[in-house]
Image 1 (cartoon, helix red, strand yellow):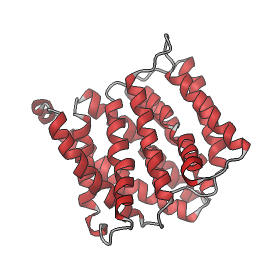
Image 2 (image 1 turned 90 degrees about the vertical axis):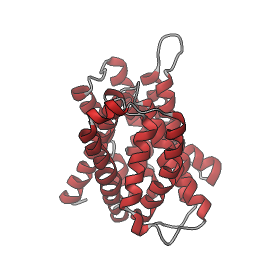
Image 3 (image 1 turned 120 degrees about the horizontal axis):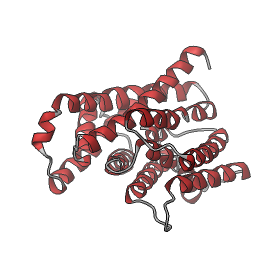
Image 4 (image 1 turned 90 degrees about the horizontal axis):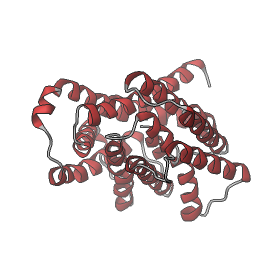
Length: 293
């Protein structure tokens, strides 16, 4: 990988990490309802990518399902989790999506894994358990939502493997449209935004939405797909571990995340496992990039 593309990938990972912290601030500090935030984000993504909506990828039901799993389902659950979970913990627990994707590929696609990849899966899950472990064998509801978000994204990634290649912006268009059409009515039914609070941070909120939709979804993801097309996935995937590491650093600096021995040890074990799994990859589905933001 040349220096320019390496620096580009580092920049992409830093954008994803920043978005994790920004999302925490939006739904926790500013108290913006998570489904509302997700709906607005994906509505803007759909608007920005509208020219790429046609022709519709086939089969139609699969691209809609993938869009809902990778977009609305995954991000709505993550935003709900971030109301109570730190960005650092969420970033580490989200790494469970890597072994979950592998396990679903075995069950659904009949793929086989080498023992080293099995070791990586085991280490990742052990590391995640160390991070989420609480006295009394309890796991917080927020971290369970992060795991559910990771599982949603993983299922979408596996279903994506069964489709023909889709242009990045066309994929984003269907993620945005499918997710917005699901989340908007759900937010109306289940949430009551504090419009006074929202008005107080309207410019900051608008900036966060534009950053999340334009810079992260349309910009960073599209550039990442171009790098995936240019280089082997087993070269790109390990470098994306910059994202959880940067999220931990930003979380400690900005949102006062906890960084104790339990978090450090669990993160080290989980990220080592992810690295082992990533190094065994030969191909990554385009949708797997969604796991990073």
